[in-house]
Every structure is written in structure tokens, then in C-alpha cells.
Length: 345
Ligand code: 13P
Ligand code: SF4
Image (cartoon, rainbow, N blue to C red; front, side, top):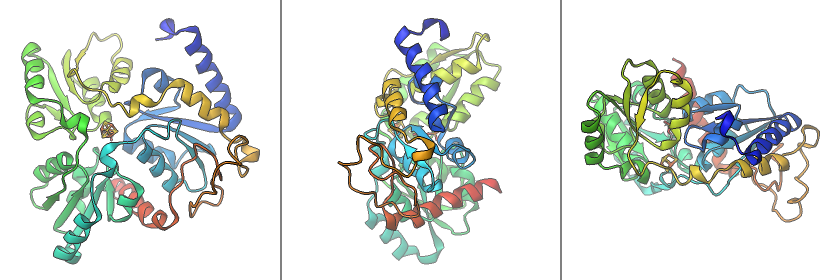
């Protein structure tokens, strides 16, 4: 990639490096964001790896190149840090796809023998209704380890259905929500790719529909898909998730001649909203370490004070700073911390 950088990209990358050092900021990026944004990041990972890592980083500011729920999760886990989304309008549609009555009705019906397992792709409010969070890399293990027999899985019906199949000893109740971009990948397109590349290993994300998952050799999170491709002896792979993982696949398999084939419509338009320009702009507006408690100059006058609880040094009025409404903080944070705890066992 180094050779193909435009002067503008090179200049932005250099500026970002300088700003990160100046502002004591770490940049975390999800595998789905554009390759040049991944390149500017200090850490690139799947949702679970990023959440785990964020609590260990020494920097006082975290810039999250991902969608809104990722920023919220980082803020919940790091209440005393400044958490910034370069593009606050990047939002995962699935993160909103469950209504409170679904949770209340299940609780009423099954009482204390019900656990509500919430995919991390969810708003802080939805997390606050739940008992534990999961990601695509730990959902099966966490649901299996829950003491309750009944598990309401929200919001993703496809990941929920996959978990139900893997953990038949539990009664998993599904909710109608999905990632429109994974759920719309047609099984016949995957079957065609498979037929065109007969030796290829099919790697799929569990947000895909069950007819797609039935064609897969490996089902896993973005990090698990990348690791499977890296470790496999196969030379061709049909990759059934968003195209953004190409960059890391290329990095990890450089020089091996491995080839990757994706369905045609495999981009997350929300992740695509995050650009190098927006990352640089967010960093320019990030507080200097010494002025962390002060509002960012250009926004201080226009923004209402943040209601964020449990976060004494939230950047008040900072245009891109993530905050979570006070009543949601403790219950939503508990679900994330329970996930981190259960995943350690
Ligand atoms: P991962 O946890 O696998 O990174 O997935 C996040 C996501 O949004 C998938 O669409
Ligand atoms: Fe959300 Fe789907 Fe984009 Fe993942 S790929 S962030 S689930 S919209």
C-alpha cells in the first residue's frame, strides 16, 4: 500500500500520527473501515478485541473508527476517558432493532429462569435492559455458560439462530432484527462462488442467514474469519462478510498467493462513512491532555452540557465526544463487564 499512497493520503497519515502523539490519543478501528483508515489506526480488530483492548490502553483519548454502538461501548467501559467517533452519524441499523416489550414479555413469561443476551451491536439503552452482552466471537460460549435455561437473544435473529443451533440444551428465543447487509447476501450467490472455486474454503459471519451459513466451512467473527484464512492450507477462500476485511486478509497472507472472493454487495455503508479526513479532523479537535476538562474551543458555546453519568471528565460540549445518558450507564456497563468477565473464564 505504501507505494500507492497519494500525496494527500500520505500528508493526512503523517498529520494523524503527529496529532495522536500530541493529544495522547489511541485510534482503534474495526476491520470493516476503509484500508487507509485501518492504516492510520494503532489497533484494528473485531468488536470483542477492541472492547477488551480499550480498557487496557494508557492513552486518555480513544478515537473509535467504527459505528456508534462501538463508541458507546468504549465510553461505558472507559468513563474517565474522552471517546471520540470521527463520524458520529455512522450507525449500525441493527443496533436499534428490538423493542422494550419484547424483553418485558419474555421476563414476565419466564421469570428468573430467563437471561437476556444482547449482541454488542446494540444501543446503550438496549444493553441496559439486558443481563449480558455477547459478540460474534463469544456468543456461543457465553450463552452456553449462562445459568438460566431460557435465553432471549437480541437484536440479531441470525446470530441468535446460530447460537440456538450450537447450544441445543438451551431454549433460545429469537427477536426479529438483523444486519441488512449480511442478511441480504443471497445463498445462491455464495453457492455460485463455491462452484466457481471448488477448492475454496467458505468463511462466513454468523450475521448471515441460515441458508448461507449452511454452505460455510467456518463460521466466525471477523477476527476468526481472518485467522482461519491465515491458518488454512487452502489457497482460495469465499469470504462471506463485509469487504473491509480484505485489507487485513491481504496483510496477513502477503506472499502466500492466497485469493479471496466476496459476494458482490458486501459493504457496510455505515462503516464506509469513516474517512481519513474525518479521522484527522476529529483528532484536530481532540483536547490536549492538559486541557482535557475544557470544552473544545469551536463547540463550547453551541453544545448543551453532556448528561453522561459516571464520567466526571467527559468532554462537555465536545462535538464528537461520545456520552451515554446517565440512567443507562450503570446497567449498560454491567452487561459489558459481565461479558468480559465470562469471556475470561
Ligand atoms: P465482529 O464482532 O465480527 O467484528 O462483527 C461486528 C459487526 O458489526 C459485524 O457486522
Ligand atoms: Fe451493523 Fe451490519 Fe454494518 Fe456490522 S455490517 S456494523 S451489523 S450494519
